[in-house]
Image 1 (cartoon, rainbow, N blue to C red):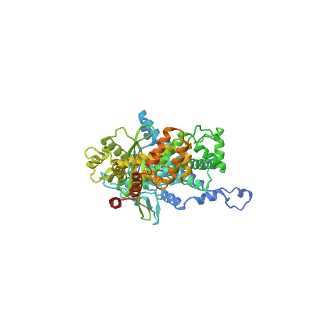
Image 2 (image 1 turned 135 degrees about the horizontal axis):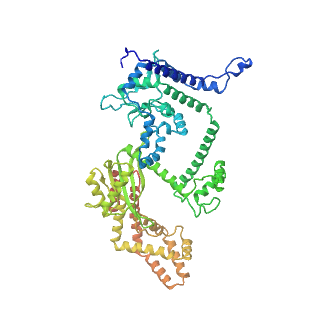
Image 3 (image 1 turned 90 degrees about the horizontal axis):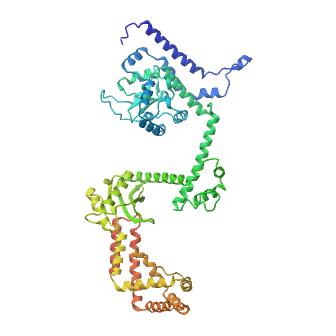
Length: 619
């Protein structure tokens, strides 16, 4: 518009009305900060009353008031008219029409996501002003507006301009720089918003550009000046500062209700802290939570409720909560559904922390093993091995269990897909895997269709290292089964344990002559047989005395014959030589088996341990 052209009478009258409305709005807002002295009518001293009015005036930031007043003084009509002609306005009525035109599915989705959006700090996720509730508005005012993030900022396709942090402050006529604390920037939409108008605008906002978002960077300077000098922005700004001051000083109209709400929040927070601590205590020790029933005061209500009842004897908060739950006055958060929800949330937090540490270290190794559970369902346990560096730059090797996964297909292809799915759910890239370790099953280490082969075809850097402990166990078991003398020796040890463990009376006879009782043999772990051999080696005389007494008191002919046979076998030269040799060999094999299971064990150390064990067996 040409500034030299004289305006018509209608436009002059319209501008005059706008200025009068702006002044009237400011006058009404400023009256709130003036306290009338009623004592002047009674001949008082004329001083303003002390109390909430004085505190309330002091609670407002002087810089904020200075910015508002200076903005209203520096209003320029020509820039306003030019900017209005250049940029079309979006009214709140148009926003409502857009919401009404949504389909039913979109409306339902909007309602479901509204709760998540209200908790977001991004202004683009906030609901429209007419849909904002008091609780959300109060929460945002208490948290305060978020500062504009540092650049770089994306450039627009047309003007190739972008947002700058210089827009967050304004240079006044007197040379003073004032921060625009109401200006918000959204990275997701690349737009700026007005914090005050977004929360307190309502139907009074005429220009909705800073409510729905504005990104015309070419005209941003003049648009900001127009917006911050408008009457509706000043009104919303003063409402924001007034509410912030009252919340800070505790002088809100509903302060009694607000105090009761805060007390209720603190009560429930303390109750939930105690409930979650009890769940954590039992979960860390692998103890069951539930019992046969869920009745308070019943000794069969399980570990969780029983632990809460013990703590309630010394804790007033928990005692009052359990009393209300027993009388059905309130929700208890003690049911098995709530326990499962807490456990799931705790599990998610632990997994998130593990994944954060793995991503920080970048490279990792995986370990996978399958075993059937009590319900005869095949489950795969996944372990991630990585190097964790703490704040003091101390590096430690961690092995973290990330959960069980049901396996339907136990072939190499099926297990590979299962492992890939677990890593994808954790947000970890298989390309960063530098090691894989499994047992010696053909579906794991097969050179054609095993898991390690299928993984290395896609990720050659993931080196396969078989489980050293499992390999050693297989080696010793095969070596023992190939020797007839060893088979006879271990068979005799098992017969000794079987005959004494057959009845309580026989076991009592054994304990009269030995300090350490006999141990059964293990079919899966070779090094576990060392305990069975050590008992016989160091207590052979006591075992012979127990067999003699058992032969005297036993009346069953079959048992007497078995005892007599064992008494002759354990004193034979063949058995005694095997007892001495096998004890030494198993001790040498037991040392590397334990060291292979250590978390700090690495490949060079394992190779050295293997070499030392081989040399010991050769000697």
